[in-house]
Length: 378
Image (cartoon, rainbow, N blue to C red):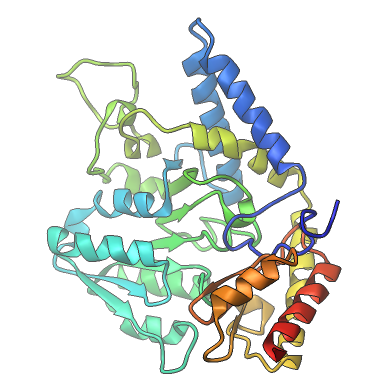
């Protein structure tokens, strides 16, 4: 196996994570699904719903979330939509606070919902020349008129990690709903919905979780469930999905009320092997390896004269290291040239994103730095 295919030069864990045997595991899961789904008997729903529940239970363990507080969602955007539209009375006439370095898709969503629900979307800007929104700037904008603060735990553009404990404590004092997008840290960094206590969390199963697209989750704090009235109702948002009495509809007493029509369980089934792998992995060792390679990356970028656009302190950073390519440098050409050497990264504008994960090696890290140096000298 060459370095182009063994994952040693794979730095895309901020996008699609990989682990040894992933392709084989997905193929086996999909083959098992096909065998059951294509069989002429009545085994389909018990199989599919059981696998979906196993997926939810894996995520509950990751979040330390109680039973009945987690369900599936197609994406973080879909999960945030379900949550925001379930509490219109809490948001009407108030502000929804978000940082400018959020995941853009969520900002697009909230911009569209603001006039319909009647809230003001307030986006905390970056300081001139900064790579992330400072916690103190976010807190300074967070007053008692904020109905909801949507926090990005780890930024996808800088890997800046917020002080979630300080944010949550402030939010409680302000009486705001506290929602957290945990996508860029979930699976690598420990997370607990109870420490600090938050009201909502959303993630995909991609990135450090190494799953597939379409396999998102949402968590809602149990004390909010009875109040939540999601915009979309359907047969799966009932206590018993197989009750079809049109005059006796009621919402489920748990997170299932955020379901609606027939759930798209295939993505959850395809991602379940990755969650099983993750549950059995030595997560402390994975994080330690990430920290070691990230520090090597930052030192090497400094030697190349490239500015690090991520926090240098491990406690303030997620799992990625970002750097700014020189002005005028064709970022797409740099990414393509690296890929031709089995070194896989990506760029957002001038920002080159590098995320070492479970398959990335010290040799792959050195090869990337050498290749990047050669490209910049051309």
